[in-house]
Image 1 (cartoon, rainbow, N blue to C red):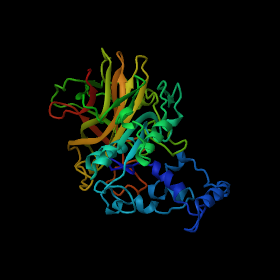
Image 2: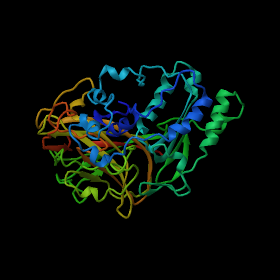
Image 3: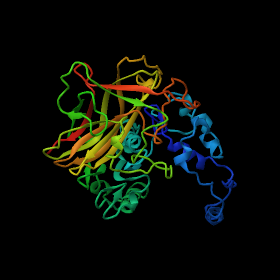
Image 4: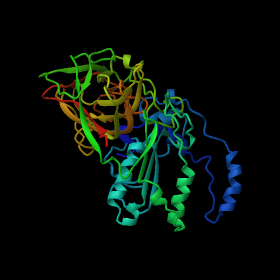
Length: 443
């Protein structure tokens, strides 16, 4: 799935990103014989060249159809019109230098990732993929991973009081230059600098605890996947509803929460793993409690924790979903609710229902039929302190981080009119909707 799609829904940051990167008008065309010294001298002139006109993406990304967004802001369309029309299983994704699973990656790598970067989960998955599938043991052994609590490309901006969105991460600094040069010196110069002896395979930051930790693999070996079940009396809408999250399965035979999803009034993205969209979405961790007053958000919350719980790793989700539409999306957001009621987002995921059985099996829904839906895993490291509560939000949109599903069953990218649908999340003995958290067992 990588980054263009998540769960079959397009991440709209790439629309804004392509607006700037596929512009040929302002790019220099230099002969193959140009030297690096010449490039450095010419760079000064290029820096004074005109930039692409700035776009208000908060307004620009609302345009329909999606395929005309760049054209609507008078940008260079380039390859966007082809990419937006590609389905997740299109063979074109295997061309043009884009990495895919059966492509060998035979090079040592030092992976620097951030919890609120757009590519955190795919990059961690790729780190594991290379370690497992590298043809050379030397390549597999020289994969290292650092996960910071920051935004896209901003881990070196951490301070003694790192604020990511609205949440303080404390002192999240790390000497990245020392790590990078030490790794290069070991591999490229062959220096006996004890890099491997002095550095763990994985160094990750645990939010809430606000400290760096280390491990030799990710997920951690002392992980206990713990199921939390969705329950309610059928009125889980908003944070004032009756939705609960508990270790006990629902004892009911047939219960569901329902909400109306209107593509023309989607749930606004607020924080999260985003970048590159200007004022449209600001990345990071924000108090979601005001957003949770929307009636199209189902909220399930645990009781206050009697003792602290660390979760580190991939979060798995299973929902039982029905709709009166042909196609729709389902979204989940994982939340840490502190003792004052502030609800900080940790990660989020989405699944387009037509791809519920796989990206090579595009099948529309039968109206009111209940489907088991496994969502793409989320990933985080967070310490839920005693008195905090674990919460998830469930809805059908997270816009403009993700493209809206217009619910028509059509192509979506070339459509301008949506269909309002009623979606249901079922939770009962027959349909045990749940979330599986990677709880770290105490040593």
